[in-house]
Image 1 (spheres, rainbow, N blue to C red):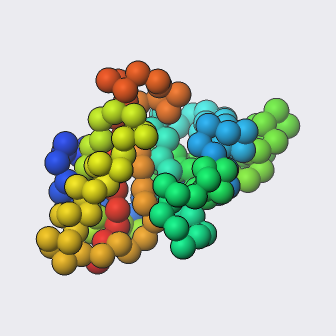
Image 2: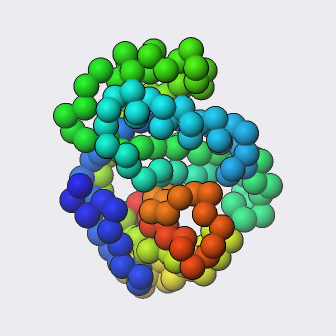
Length: 177
């Protein structure tokens, strides 16, 4: 998938083409009830499609003037995403096939995200330690005269339920211009 799931341990500038996949938009704490139901719905629809498993992704934001780290996590907003292969079939049918057992599947949409220039880094460790990696990304952006141009994007290469920081790997990506 053209380097989509690859990143260096040091911040770098990359360019990615557009991608499509399944998405659910919501609000709430990572790991909370709404988040968990949304993740389950994405994977249920993906399974009904017979598509290969893909890492969970999230695009995050807050509707507040404060730093996201100063906003209570239950107020965080997200687009959760599973990338699909280009040749995937009947998404509407797959969603309907699982809807009776997974009501949140009704909220799963087929979306296409445009590509573009990004600053990214492979963060190793706990999610709570991401600010240090984000600061390194910010330093590169400043040095290159770049500014954010879209939502903060995370790709969870390890299971999002993993609690051992030594096993946690997350690509942090920020679209820029």
